[in-house]
Image 1: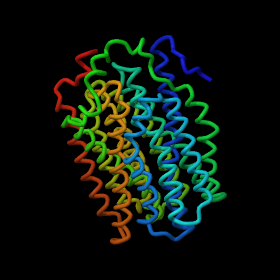
Image 2: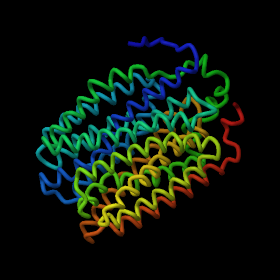
Image 3: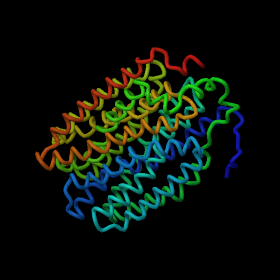
Length: 408
């Protein structure tokens, strides 16, 4: 185990931090993104409505929105190792408890609240804050590599969970996910550590004095980033929850549907990396706009799954759309608001992720229950994508020269 006073010799250790973050996100978001296969299994087992079942996932997002800032404060105060250990223990406990539930209310508490809190503590914005201390010139690429773990989680965890559900049951699948967190990820995350100040050096000294949480809350650029975050993840998480059900409604077999979702995960992982590198070259907003076009195309394709072959271009476009969302919003936040309170600031932006992701998946389920179709939800989600793109573009240009650039 690394000692508390461990100080790596040089900034190359930053890539180990990136690898650790990628593995944590692989597990945490593999669990979150696999909810789509549990969604169908729960409806089959209990006969719950889609709106009610969607509420379980939406609860995780409400918890995310409510506790993300607190998680960021924990990270600023205790560092990543202690904070992520707490997150893993909470997530594992919530999953084990979820495997024993009998009612919707019980699952909403164990999975929605407890596991949701664990995933919040292990969330994207937390890792972006840690990585920001290690990288300056290649921040977009570094965050992209770390966030690629979420796509690999969808590629491996979602089809694996579907297979366990198919051959055993959903309860057994949840236990396997708990084992992944408690026995594999806890030892791995012990290698995560903040960059020593001796290496972080003078470039951030002025920023540490400038960007406090209270000062950030007065910045219009901050609220534009929050709006971008609210609208960035909401359409993606709507698909996370409902895509498997949409495929099943269109006659796509569950095994093929799980493979398509896995393919989307691979594309997501690759896009996180490529989008991060591209954003370092042409800017966050321009890269984000490209991804937004891909996501809108994916949303529209969901209405033609009955053709069969459209599931594959959907998977590719969905992966490209998702891989350009959270990493670029997080990188934009780190660009503008770097400093010792970045964890709390990023956590507050992360609360926006959770708010949007809580509302739209539930709304899509409600619209389906009312209309018997996802068409209205698809058009609503497409509009949300456009709002997010405009907000991030405005935030990127609100300050013509982000503060961190002037000090590097």
